[in-house]
Length: 193
Image: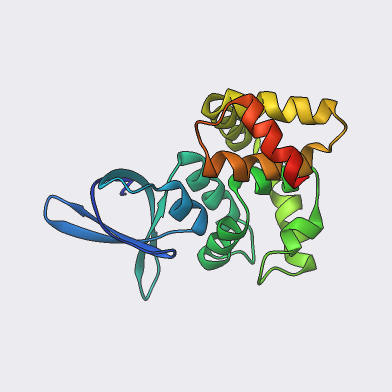
């Protein structure tokens, strides 16, 4: 029903934010991932999903359509509610969740608070073949987002570091310094690896 909101960011905290659109303030429940993606901009555009239950109508907000698409896939799995899906997106980035499902990494998914072994296995079984469209969007975002990041990752792999380990370090560096050059990213990553 409500696909996105564009307006003034009135209030922001790690679990919720309020966006004012034409004099109406909308309370959105968000993940830590979305919280980190939103800068200090006063005017924002946020993608949404309205969850209607018998006792409540809850509006969830997402920084990117990829995160929203993944959220919708997650809540389609038996045993995963909106709260658990939001916890997953707070603990792991959409790319990490997609990677864990694609590589059948039960331990990564099980590492999220509130998810046991059986639920983690169910997530993998139910979503393994359903994430192609979401994964394609996520890969495009990563590729478009920062070519320096990709070049640094390739360089570190050439130096013998694992992709998984390097990717985490590089993502943290790029979050702190979005305009960092390839050389800077590599130097900082080598200090942390």
